[in-house]
Amino acid sequence: MQLFLDTTDVAILKDLAASGLVDGVTTNPTLIARSGRPMFDVIAEICELVEGPVSAEVAATDVAGMLAEGAKLAAIAPNVVVKVPLTREGLVATSEFAVQGISTNVTLCFSAAQALLAAKAGASYISPFIGRLDDHGAEGMDLISEIRAIYDNYDFDTEILAASIRSPAHVTAAALCGADCATIPPEVFTALFKHPLTERGLSQFLSDWAATGQSIL
Image 1 (cartoon, helix red, strand yellow):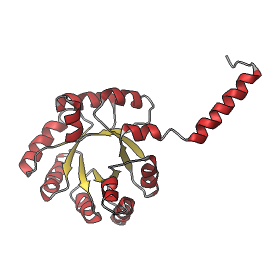
Image 2 (image 1 turned 180 degrees about the vertical axis):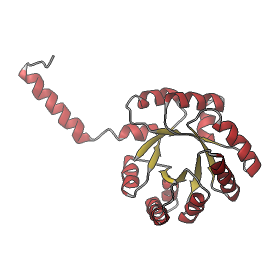
Image 3 (image 1 turned 90 degrees about the horizontal axis):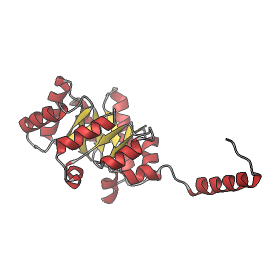
Image 4 (image 1 turned 180 degrees about the horizontal axis):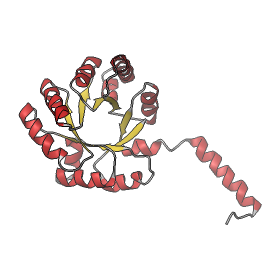
């Protein structure tokens, strides 16, 4: 499963990308606003740091506006993926982007029926929001499983990008359900490395090694 970082913090991205485990980046208007920087500067810098897909979201809600904004965003770098909302207008724009060869990430997906429409429109990625469904009493991972089954039934190329990830357990569950990618906040990405038994075992190994008085170098 590909792991994307959901961030516009370039300093954090540089640090975590050095692990070699970051496959892409997603952004949204809220993250851009928090950065306090011009959107085009942020996206361009992220695209220089990460070779994989970088989602940049349109602000328009009408088809013509989305197409105009999407074309401008796609021109920033070859790895930009234009992010559009899962609305009727968004899917019409997605179909046109597909004809133009522009990659898209259809966001704010909350049902398998919506995901079916996005795939038929030619979306490159579909972003089901797991955590937000959980917040409303639904089981977000059920949605991932449903989309996986539908896409496999019809050999759709659209990749499932699990979003609104809240914990390492969400990442694991999304992988088990067959998500192609997960976009996760930096703090969750960092938490993936950790387990108390790993830390305890390493501490014991280092203590025992020190007691031998040996050196590898």
